[in-house]
Length: 151
Image 1 (cartoon, helix red, strand yellow):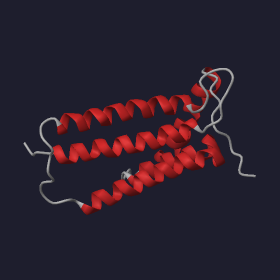
Image 2: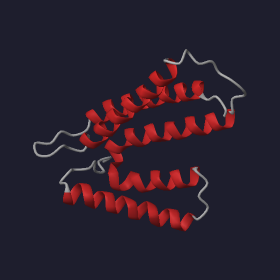
Image 3: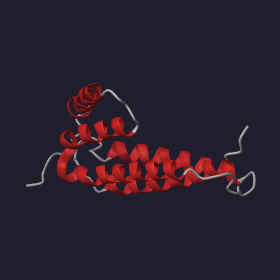
């Protein structure tokens, strides 16, 4: 079996960094008097991701500080960096473009980025998933999601 401890440790550090950024950005979202607010759930998910990333780092460091092995796939790293940058942009733009406008675009981009070939299915799924999640959070849980407010 291939030794991937260095990659696992680096992945844990990246996950922790993204989770910390995500947590602090979600904390800037609108506060509400009743309910958890639009930032509550992302903050919870970011906390869990941070904890899992931390556990990943600790697991690999306790076996001795890992060293990089083998060749680094530059193309895979760049694809990951671009996707993380787009995700950070999605979180940042959420407060301006709102959930309903931005999420189907992000979902569709994700499908295309990961080489899903059926574009029509991806577009329908993007709109459908956005509508279902909006309905669950906004109407059932009464969590106000970010709205379009560019103008």
